[in-house]
Length: 368
Image (cartoon, rainbow, N blue to C red; front, side, top):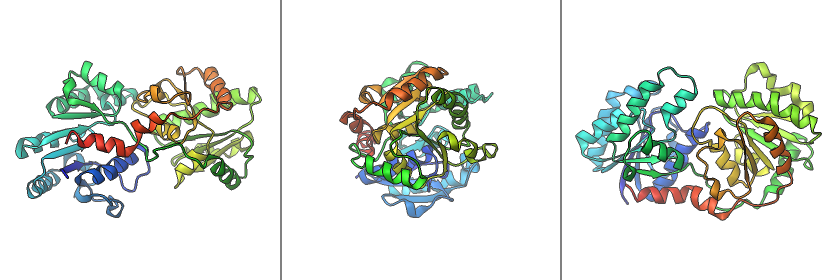
């Protein structure tokens, strides 16, 4: 097996967000396909790293982004282990990769999870242009760029001037490799646990609700989508899951009579995905691939997303399971929810060939 060092500049174990989960599962599967070392922060739960060696080298945020002592420890590890390939998650510490490449003569890979300067722009960060210059410089210096979607790859090539031969798509993945067979059983169990009618369509939205784009999506659900569903006399139950809901919303208790339940942080989110008939993704801002949408599709949910929220998802492998509404067109969004309650098709098998983590890790190994 090839020896690889991956650097993660923030705590990701145990994971609580989609971004942390993406890194955790990517590394778990890459560790099965390579001799993997991971340089991480000192707050990671090392017991969760079962397929690779997790080295608590870097300081905890935000110091890890400028950790010179950690850099020296990484260089020492590379030399002692005769490592020839280094992967850096996100371009934030790309400067560290440049130093390592110059001193250790390794192959440098930047694993992008978004085009970060565009994400910062969508979040209203005034310094996004400065980061754009930095991000572009890092990607030009690297040997290989892993892009999370074809859209990102095209932007990196065409707008940022990175060589096409360096860029390869490594999407966000899922553990499932086939359609779940226990959706009906799981729905019955979930409905019993929340004391709701299993005969009604079960709708799900989840995410880190303290993250501004997800908090905004909750507002769209309550103020735009819910009134239109009620007006149409469509009967449903809607579960909103995730930590960080605004205290002002009082755990959505005022909406319980409307069929809305706040589940908070759910340890086994897969159980909710498997139980749900419909997953909604009314996210407009934030950029990047919405990982929860891929997870929902993998659980064979009928998915309704805004145009912005569906960016980065390969529609060609989704069949009829993904319906897209134009941004801010909540009439269209609501209509798609109602129509999808009658959809009986399954997600195509090609979806799993593209988005299964093992397939992604095996593809990754080709370039290290």
